[in-house]
Image (cartoon, rainbow, N blue to C red; front, side, top):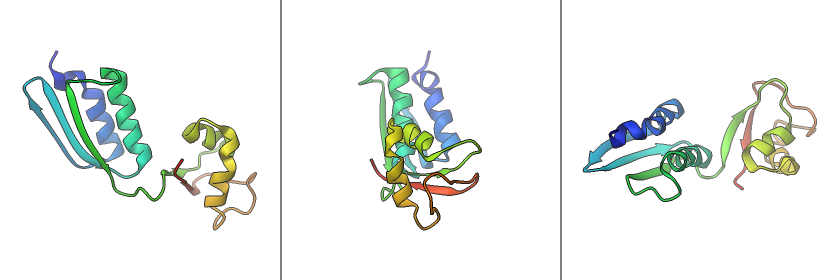
Length: 126
């Protein structure tokens, strides 16, 4: 299996996320990936995918993923049935961090228990 085929899932994820200025080359047995993620969360998704395929310290891929906006962790579009605690659990692994999301969005939220589908929430850096 070629190194590009091995990491095709990473390349597909980059496409799904709309990674900007993407560049993929193969040098010998090493895949070199470069691009710009919109947020740190998207960069983390790419790295998590790389580690899932190649292990914690893969030697057959070199990735240089920069971030366009690191002032926030991500922007989240609220879906039906979500709550701030569910969103906090998704991004931080801790539902009790919902208040950090609420505080970062007081310009559009007045009550942490009331959010609506299609609202775009700022997810602050961890």
